[in-house]
Structures are given as C-alpha cells and as structure tokens.
Length: 147
Image 1: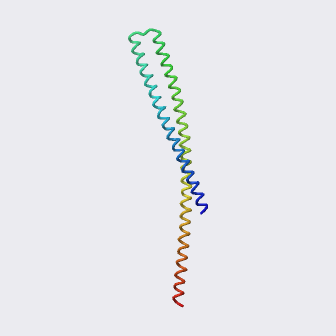
Image 2 (image 1 turned 120 degrees about the horizontal axis):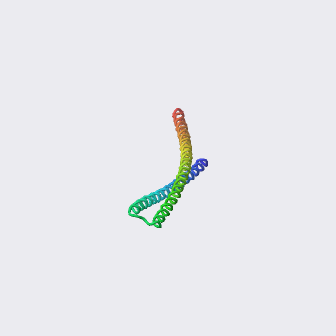
C-alpha cells in the first residue's frame, strides 16, 4: 500500500506540474495574441501614413513636412522590426513551453498507467485471496458434511 500512496503523490504532483505548464502556455498565447494585434496596428499606421504621404505629394508638399513623414515612417518601420523580433521570441518560447507541456503530459500518462496497473494487481490479488477463502470454506463444508 505504501508504494501505491507514493505513486499517487507522484501522479498528483505530475498533474499539478502539467496544469502549471498549461497555464504558462495559455498566458504566453495571450501575450502573443496581444503582440500580433500591436503588429497589425503598426502595419495599419504605416499603410495609412504612406497613403497620406502619397496624397500630400500629389497636392504638393513642403520639404519639412516630407521629412516629418519620412521620419515618422522610419520610426514605425523600426517599431515593426522590434515587434517582429518580439513575435519571433514569443514563438520560440511557445515552442519550448509546448515541448515542456508535452513532456509533462507523457510523464503524467506514464504515472497514471503505473497507478492503474498497480491497482489492477491489488484487485487481482484480492480476488485470488477471496477465491482461496471461498474454496477453503467450501472444502470445510464438504468435509464437515461427510463426517
């Protein structure tokens, strides 16, 4: 019985570790989704300002305004580069966390199988003991009836 309880403790801890890994993965997914939204927002800003610059150029644009547009577009481009790097990092972290989750899931599955086999073995022994007791009782009844 002692091994069974130790095995159950290991199984419970593995389950908690799996749940912790799942929570980390969910949190990272949420951060990645937020980063994607920010990236899309930056892309939209970049597109809008490129369109504005194009319209301004058609109507005639002072040099200082053209420089302002160019600087702002360069700033947006830099922010997009940083956002892309951030997304790449988040994707890498997500792959690592997913691998960690999968490993913890396999560990839990293995422990659950061991726990189930242990339980089946105990039940099998109990059935054999019960059968032996039944056989002995029947034998005593049979031999007692003959005497």
